[in-house]
Length: 476
Figure 1 (tube, rainbow, N blue to C red):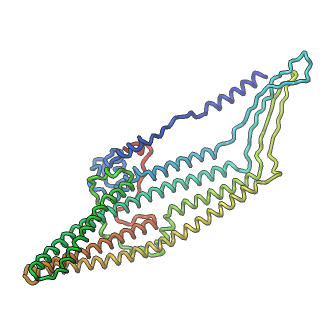
Figure 2 (figure 1 turned 135 degrees about the vertical axis):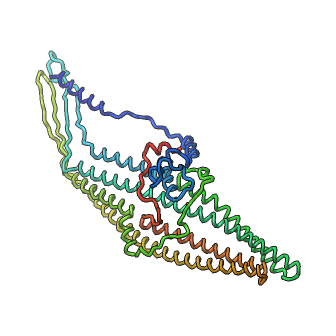
Figure 3 (figure 1 turned 45 degrees about the vertical axis):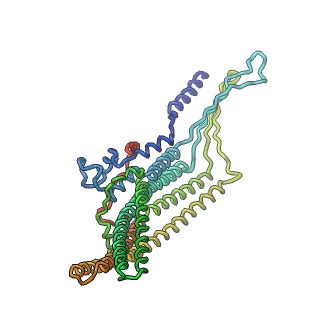
């Protein structure tokens, strides 16, 4: 009997050790990770394969990397490299592991030990084979199912968090690409304005030297030329800042974008919102909001947590058994043990869980109201921005027609070059206003897309797959 009991204990111990995980060292080297980041490139073959698998119409033999990077390809590059998306995916892995923890059943316990009896006669040894106790804890009231439900709700919320991170990457890339294109155009207009100001200043100086114009006009022309040079310098400094913003949105160093050809075919023509009324925008915003869907999972998790705490009012059962050998006697015991809910019935944790569920409901209702207000404001702002852009475009059309008439007049000798240069300067000012209106319309469109969490531009990226873990490990 004694040897059998020892073998049984050894068998349980061996079974437990056989399922044990072993430690695998993991090293985090900041200097090495910084070097890896500096080596990231948009010509990475792993990135190319990811682009090919997600851009419709692109065959395996298509040019990769693409000759012109548009919003779709840059967004996919952001998915591949984005550190924020990688953090969200890592968080999801942690929460998914919590499902394993929630589903675990409590392990039985085994106790072995010698016994000493001080009352035995001297002819007998006071030591005996000790008591062996085997306890099986049994959870009651469905606690394990509530834990699993809570863990699964949290995992669903973490998965939606990955979706939120992906959308944020898309919006960051869109905003940075818009800033880059606008900055380039601002520099071109500033340089053209400076050249026109220089021509005007030269013509006025020549007339002043001939006594045809007073000296204050020269000072005014030179001041305008100095101001135009300042605006050109300011526009030049915005170019590297915009490029750094785009690189940060993608998750690559700025040098990875050097010489990159950017494209946005429909940039000058934001979509018409006539198909979007307030009710439809509000409905799409409520349906598509990843934040609201994530908050719903948090409410479900809080509700399951409350169920779990209520179930903990009911004690678990500890089914215990024991064996001992004493004085040539085999002694067996069977002793169920339960915790008596006398001092408390888990009122504190239940009250906290109920309050957390109410808190989760309040957070959701507040977020829902914010989404509705954001959608209404975004649609109104976009409509207003399009009206401003339309007026600015009309002004540019009129200014260009006027300029063309001035040029014909100069050719016919009906006007002078100074008047023509002034008309060119006025046209450039109107074009700068149009560019500002276009930037405002694109910003308002981005805000409307963000409110509905849905792309509105033609040809926008629809379905896609996020990079697999083995792909993201090859980010150099």
